[in-house]
Length: 307
Length: 312
Image (cartoon, rainbow over all chains, first blue to last red; front, side, top):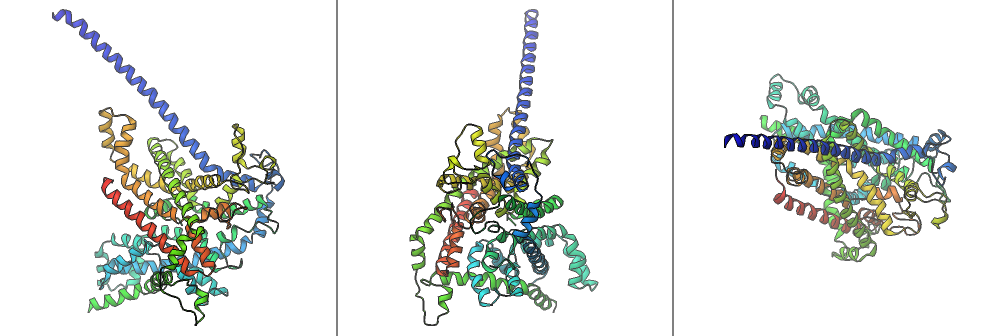
C-alpha cells in the first residue's frame, strides 16, 4: 500500500508545485500589467493637470494672427517676447504688482504680530474667561466671509476709508488682519513648548517679549512661515474685496485688475497679450511653490483654505 | 498679585485682535441679521432721516421669489453636486495609485499639487481661451475654435460652442465642472494621500494572506480606514462649492455668463455682491443668511453621517 501511494504522492506534490508556479507567474504578469496601467493613468492625469500651463505659455508667445489659426500650433512659429512687455504696459501690471506686494507685506507683518501676541496669551497666560473666549473665536470660523463683507463695506464707507491713498490701503489691509484660524494654529504649536521653559525664563527675569522672541518664535518658525506664505498668497489671489472697495486701477490689486484689462472698447481681446499677463501673474506663485513647497503643503494640509 | 498681573497682561496682548474682531466680525454678524429683517433696507436710503424700515421677513420672501436668486441657487447646487463627488472620487483613485508606486512618485505629487498654487481668475482665463470660439456666431465658419474643439474634431467629433455666444447651458456647466474639478484635485489628493500613508500596513498584509481581491481590499479596508479624511474633504468641498464665485469670473468674466445671456451662471456669492452694489443691503443680508443656513445644514448632516460611518 505504502509503495503504491508514494508515486502518487510525489505526483500530487509536483502538480501542486506546478500550479503554484503558474499562479505565481500569472500573479507576476498581472502585477506588471497593473503597474503599467497605474503609470499610464497617472501620466495621463499629469498631462491634463499640466496642459493649461503649457497652453498659457504657448499662447502667450504667439502673434495674434497665429493665435487664431484654424489648427493651432503647439510651438509658436514666431516667438513674440514683446507680448510680455505689452502686457505689462496695457494691463498696468507694474502698479498692480506693487500694490499687491505692498498690501501683502504690510498685512502679513501686522497679522503675524497680532497672531503671535494672541496665541501667546491663549497658550501661556491665565485669565478669566479664557476658554469661553477661545471657543467663541473658533465658532466665528463657521460663518462664511460674505456675511461679514456686507457690513464691513458699510463700515469702511462710513469711516471714509474708500477714498484717498492711505484710506484705500487701510481698507484693503485692516479688515483681514485677524485670522482666528492662524491664532488657533499657532496656539497649538505654542502649547507643545514645555511650560517649564517659560517659568525658568520668568525666574531669570526675562520679559515676555524677549522670551517670545528668543524661544517661542524660533521654535515655531515652520508654522509662522506657513502662515506668511498663505497670507501672501491670499493677497495675491483676493478678488472680491479689492473689487468692491478699490475701484480705480491706481489702488486695486492684481486679481481684480487682471480680468478686464485686455478687452478694448470694441470687445476685441488681444489674447496672446492677455495670456502673457496671466503667465506673469502666475509666475511669482510658482517661484514661491518651487522654493517653499514643504511649508505650503504642510500649511495647506492643516488648514484646508485656499490662500 | 501675579495672577492679577497676568490677567492684565493677557488682555493687553489680546487687545488688538479683540478690537479688530469686534469691529469686523462681531458687529457684522449683529448688523447683518438686523439688516436682513429690516424690510427693503438699503445703506444709502438709510442715510435719509425720514426713511424708516419696518421689521419683518419681507427680504427673505423677496429673495426666495426673485428669479435671479433661484437661478443662482440652482447653479450653485448643480456645481456642488457635480464637482464634489467627481473630484473626491478622482482624487481618491489618484491617491491610491500614487501610494502604490515608488519611482516618480514625488515628481507626480508635485505636478498634481500645481493647480493649488494658482490664481483662480488667471487660470480661469486660460481655460476660457482653451474653450473659446473666436470669429462669428456661426460656429461652422468660426476663425478659431479653441484647442478643446480641435481635439474633439481630431477624434471625429463635432465642435461645440462651449462658452461663446449661442452656447448651451449644459455646455457652460460642463466647462465649469472641468475647471472646478481641475482646481479642487490638489487639496483632496494631498489630504487623502496623507491619510493613506498613515494607514497601518498590517491590515493589507492580513488581507494578502487571506487572498482578498484588490477590489475588495479597496472597498473593505482602504475606504473605511480613510473615512475621516474622506469626510473632511467632502465637508470642505461642499462648503467651498457653495461659496463658488471666482472660478466663474475667471472663465466667463464679470458678466457671469455667455455674452448673449449674462448672469446665466451666476452663483449665490455673486448674487450677494450684485445686491450690495445696487444698495440692497437688506436683500444681500437675507441671501447671505440663507447661504449660512445651507452651509450649516450641510456641515451638520455631514457630521451626523460621519459620526456613524466614520471609523477611526
